[in-house]
Image (cartoon, rainbow, N blue to C red; front, side, top):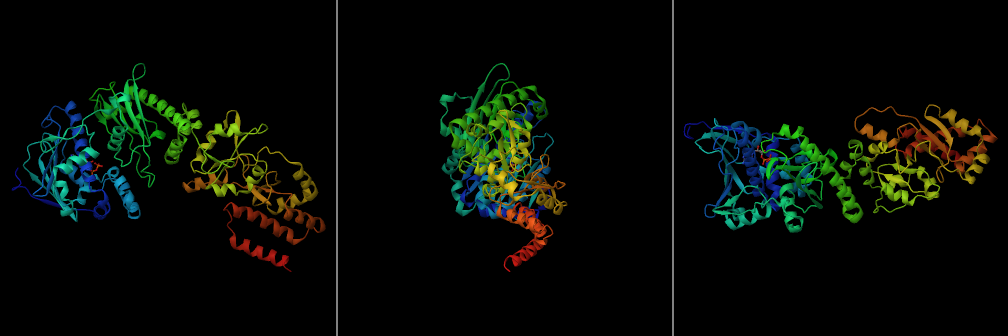
Amino acid sequence: MSSETSTKETFEYKAEMNQLLNLIVHSLYTHPEIFLRELISNASDASNKVRHLEITDESILDRHKELTIKVQVDEKAQTFSIEDAGIGMSRDDLIENIGTIASSGTLKFLEKMKTDKDKVGDLIGQFGVGFYASYMVTDEITIETRHADKDSVGLRWTSSGQGGYSIEEIDRKERGTKISFKLKDEFKDFSKEYKIKETIKKYSNFAVFPIFVGEEKVNTIEALWTKKKKDLKDKEINEFYKFVANDWEDPLAHLQLSLEGVGSTFKALLFIPQKDSFDLMRTQEHKTVQLYANKVMIVEDCKELLPDYLHFIRGVVDTADLPLNVSREMVQSSPVMQKIKTTITTKVLQWLDKMAKKDTEKYDKFYKTFGKLFKYGINSDFTNKDKVIDLLRFETSTQDEKTSSSFKDYVSRMKEDQKEIYYITGESRSQVENNPNMEYFKKHETEVLFLIDPVDAFIIPSIPEYDGKTIKAIDKGDIDLKEDDQAKDAKENALSGALIDLFKETLKEQAQDVKISKRLVDSAVTLVATADGADKHTEQLMKMMGQDVPKSKRILEVNADHPVIRNLSKRYIANDKDPMLEKCIVQLFESAQLIDDELTSKSEYVKRMMEIMEEATQ
Ligand code: ADP
């Protein structure tokens, strides 16, 4: 069918597509050249897909056609085109993949980008909006394509990027896709060969298919991971990383592996990025590693090669143990994969351990960025749990906020008579530092781990002990505290058991129990969880996740040595019916709630405070 006889159909973009295009055009101006990277990456993906298909399907169009990527520019006409012999697109592909925003994450991405324009460049490739980057440099794009299916037809798609697009049938014999456009005046440099060559060398040097600009092949096609370690230059490695991970920045660290023999034979070049680009919205899973079988890419994002908690790793794994025509399903169930995964996990944990010992600064940076994900290893990887535990880091009460400590560090600083490891959970360092439950530990100079990352509250129940020492929350009821003599005396002098009974009676609805505290020094009262109750932080977290948690009552601990408590004691001895007693008891209880952010009856609290102040100022 020729283009003259076919009808041209027009389609409208959804509202969000217009938004997206608008955003791209207005935010990408600092890196216009990424349009080229995105187009080359799409052409490579399409070539990869067809290479795979060629092995399994004999009937495809242009079987064994050379898979090159051709860029043509015309400086005079100010035009640019890129053509691949890849899998091509059907009409449905064009509508679904090019005409619509595919992922729900993109909408969130849009929202975020409105406030955070600097990040657009970093994220654009990862959100499936890559093709549209070209609208930065042109006003209208034409795609001519034909799918590898032997019954396919040639199609032309055109759009000015505003409002909608049109699709019509054309006469196209060969398989693959050609994308062409005229450059806007301010970007006419991209119609110069030298500029295109320079950009390709910068961003796409490691594309596995030959890229031609005019007649000249411009990229080095090299499987870097097969080189010997000593022959690898840092610069090359960093460039390679940027290429595979679609990142702007150098990686934080890299690991080259070459394993042969017993378990599995594979080579790998793995990276930890500097930043977690998904931290912003967490709407998508991380992209992980590419799987190659003898230098041919078979899976672009092979999550099965790494356990979930190591999904921040990027890079390439190449094995000779898988046949080229392996299907994705086969990859998933292959025992080869399981072996590689086990080996990679062990190697990555060793790598992190070495980094933690030799380059603390780097490790801390990694931990800050990916720690949240990494920590889940404790709950999910039983075999390596202990290794992951050793790699955990915390701020602590005796170290400044810049210093992170492992359990091992903590244990090495423990005093001789200290038998347990203590921690407190909370939202920030200042919040936990000022928690009344810290008073005892400050006074006795006993170190307390600060678990101030929300994830910590989830993992800590899985670590009951370290090095034979029980790990305990300091705001739980059953802590084995030394009772110093002073407090003991004070307790006996100031508090008759009867006053405590009055506390219990007054608060019988609100508190699980009332006890004389051994952990308070400066504060009058504090609330602690019962030994088996969820602590406040866990409760809040569960609530945050939409889970209904029955609120467990807490234990009120009273500081017998505090002047207010002593005064109450005196009043009680003078007149145990004194109405001030009850008022103060409720007020004390609610003050403890207030500190824990749990006070609900604020107006009553204030009213009662006024009454007490009124009496005090008479
Ligand atoms: P992404 O590549 O991140 O998925 P793009 O907007 O760049 O996002 O492309 C959207 C989709 O369009 C691709 O996933 C692919 O299915 C299709 N596509 C783009 N370019 C090509 C091409 N050259 N050949 C075949 N399909 C393509």
